[in-house]
Image (cartoon, rainbow, N blue to C red):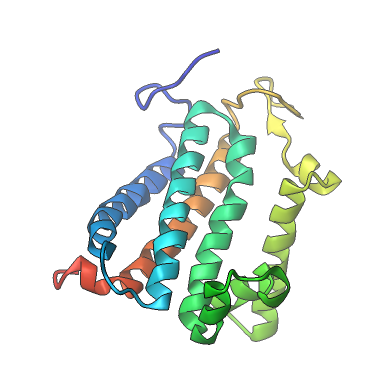
Length: 210
């Protein structure tokens, strides 16, 4: 089985991959400045949450990128769920400081807001409250179905085969450009959210030029 490199990966020419790569470069440059700044400092509760959630989100994004490079689109798409959750949680904590004590106490499952509630708050400027909640619920249900192997999620994760038909694969998918684009555009979008939150939370670490 082929191991692809940045020079010969199957989706290298896609605009979605190019945009995702550019956001990864931005995120990594930002992280190199923030990480050493946090060492030995008396961080705020929000900064402490950020030191865990944001780097983990960056790491998941890198994992998604490598899976796309190797053609493992099913795994890459499933990893969008934890990437989305980290972007939603740090955004919710930024916008709702009263939730920080719960986070600091372990973020107990029954006391934390649902993912779709946090997503709705994150997208609060898009439309009405109800519209945001409906959209956030759809996003949450979609990715939950992928993770939990619901029939709907399994059907959605069919791939395009070499002869143009769709089916299910236990290996690489090297010609499904539509799914590649969807994964990379979404991953880049949530990576933008994470880098934006990092900029807000750790502005002092990034210096006056930023």
